[in-house]
Image (tube, rainbow over all chains, first blue to last red; front, side, top):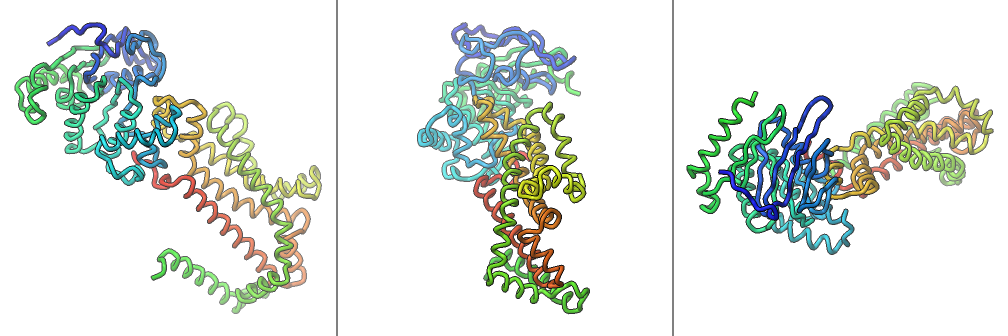
Length: 258
Length: 253
């Protein structure tokens, strides 16, 4: 199931990255490519360093050694080419939905009318039209994460980094999110890097799945599902290839789960 | 129907004032006037203007002291909260200020700064500043890490993180510190007028007591409490206007 991808189609490239916290080796000599315009999942048991890797790509954590290339350029910190969606939403509780969505643009110095026009467009796109003047505490968990998603979309970064974005929302909302995410990948022409601990979720939404194993953390396997993506969202979960991949991943992760 | 919370407030005031009136009529002490006597003394002082003259004198050390405490206190609190080294250096000073028996220290202040405005401002500041500093520092240190991380990932510079994340996130605790500090400042202002030189409201209290005009004495005490309560309500309103939506806690809690 491995396919080589031409070098100019790689949006983000992780080269020999290592990271230690004190004595603990979080990542060891990790190399991984993220194809442009596709969704890659980082999947693995807890403690395998998947969130650490995502934060290093985001520039929120420094690596001890190795390189991160975005569009061929080495990056050392956060940049306008990447936008982050947080597991705990990280919304400003004192700001309305529209100010939260426009916050990335506010930090980039856009005039208020300009950034709010852009924010309104993405608020509509994530299905929150009419909630512009509400505060986060007035929204449900799923709606809060839609705000977080709209904020990431509105800065128009080429790479979206999603850190277990659906883990804090309920199962039904999560399924809807997963379907919406597939639409988004298809239409937004962005590169998505998606951290999850759910095998089913990873297989459902991903063009490419990187299985990370812990102690020391490394890329165990890269899986590229090929057949079921175009069969429609309703048919994915009963496709034989989908079921085989889910089972295969569980077989390789089973022994690492305490 | 009248607002329920207003009804409760009025009812609570009626209970307290009623108890005061009864206690004064019993009387529990000949030095304790009834509520109505105190109110008529207050009305008399209001109509002859003496209460306004008194507040003219009391408010200047109070206002200067509270203003200095708020500005310097929040500034120092931010600094202490942001820098571990600065905390090590300065936090103990404010802990000492907060716990020191102030009345016993006033003679030293008078020896150094005289009996004028400076000493009184100092007393107000010593009362008001520590809680503002310590609350602000604690609030800053407890800024949710994920909000700072979010701002960093969306390219916020350090001053933007301070103004757009740390300060608003700390505002509920800063305002709680301000409320406590301002209350203490009111106590400090009266204390300084009782212990340093009798002026303003402190003079009314001291003088009325010396001639056994207890209704006037309690009227003065009542008026300063009323002023403090009004000012604290004003602070609460200001907080709600500045940081709407912040009084409901963090959505991830």
